[in-house]
Image 1 (cartoon, helix red, strand yellow):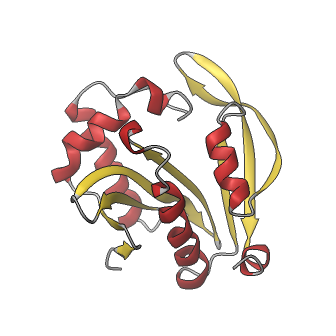
Image 2 (cartoon, rainbow, N blue to C red):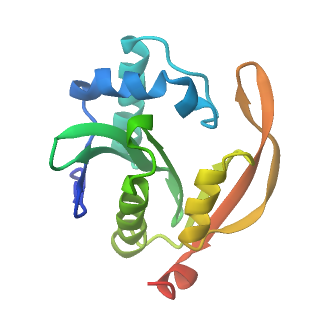
Length: 180
């Protein structure tokens, strides 16, 4: 399967190659980005390259798709969004964005096209998401796109040598279809 590059009015969702190692490091090494990520911050370019390799392997094994978020006008790589645990007509969605680009609507714009792609092109039935209970921005985004809170996963995340609870959300195709 060829990598599916997607577009929105302001964004290109592209394959993440090693050319983006520096940009990915700049995002995943930031405390404010990783605060609610569920993994520790990366500390060097080699770790960023390993993350990119994991994206490549997941796509090759048809277990996930991770897009780089690039602003069309400036050609700047500002984050990633993607699907993981892709099997049996379901997947989990996740994303992160460089703080300089927060609150500009980029994640909402990318999220909308990912939902459409997931349900209409991949023929998925369910999309899930997990987040920290304190991550109000992500919870707001999920609810904006009709994700329903299903419950609490106790001790789900392990980050900075500590276990944290997570909230799990989902949307299924019939509910999403009714919201467009």
